[in-house]
Image 1 (cartoon, one colour):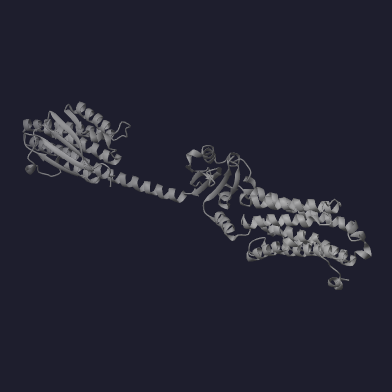
Image 2 (cartoon, helix red, strand yellow):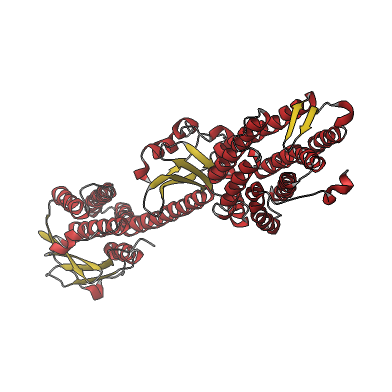
Length: 567
């Protein structure tokens, strides 16, 4: 009778030790799990440990019992716990694999109802003999299995098959859980083999229950997963949550460039589910992104920018880096993908602003050119026309003819000024020859077109410095303006352009052997385009000076910082 179980006789049995020794280990494992009970899968695992402890104790009491009624009671009690243990194990595997949503009320109801029904049938087996047709006890329990027992065995193996499928899925889906899943699969197979040997009466360890030994090994694998692989630690779980929720997409490749893992951001950006991607060759899974495939084929490139063909295109910065262990052994590759559309838009806006500013600045410079050069020529032409008209009205035809001849010269001067300006604009076209070579070519062209001998002298240091494009452009225009003034006004036979370096400044000197002029009597300070040249020098952070002596020529000296951009 159940009420008299503790009054039955028991004695020490050495076969009990392999069962009892792991109990302390299971208790410690349960305490560890209880401390992490908020982690998915921890609660059903605690239930699994509790049921396993009762199961092992029932087996131990059965081995130690000296009377057949006691042995029979503990035998039935042990068998009644098998299906609850299988149900708890399934709940643990589903919850740990992130499939707890499968454990709805109906499933939980079945997982509770079937073991309870089996336990009730065990309790009432003497009346229907559906679980065991016959039970004999002569120091060892011998049974003839009934249909319910076989049905329970099939049910237990079905639960085990579901566990196996879930664990294989977890093994494939999550590289971080791969070793843990492998250990759980090994333990599951070990227990099912032991169960089969027990049912088929081929237990090589009789009278020990082979499933007890298999369970001890299985829980040893669990302990390895807990304490070595951080199975229930919150930090790795928190790390996974952070990785899934971060803004950057992350893809992990193995050494063969198969996709091993990817976060939720990568799923969303690539429109590719993790389930579809993991295990596939990266080049095949990402064929819709040829730039990314190119980066994967040639990881030495390390990074590039990507603009997928999309109704709403966005820019992404992608990079690939090797994953190595502490011994520098290559384990795979890590791909990062970051949305840089906003940065691109800001850069484009900045470039638009720069282009607009440059256009406005060039308009200002063009207006200065027209005012200081062609504007003055047109003003002079207007005066000659007015003078000729006045002379004709007074009948002074000879003087009027002289004015018209002077007007013709002024018009020709205007044409030459326009030609010189257009030549200068052409000179600003980007060249692959470098600043100094381009300047030499322009000076040679000025010399041919304007029939003036022009020499270029540059210190060797000038050839070694990388002059900024904006500075070079202004230097070309300053030299053009100065040579145009020499041609129009100086009546010079020779002009020299001298280039040298002083500290961080490029010094440009344009001097001629022309007639010169008195700077104190020059009239307008902006005559001969001086304001234009001074403005160009100032625009790149430089300065300009001009000296001239009547009969001894003119010198224009400009200093500009060769690194400074146009402002």
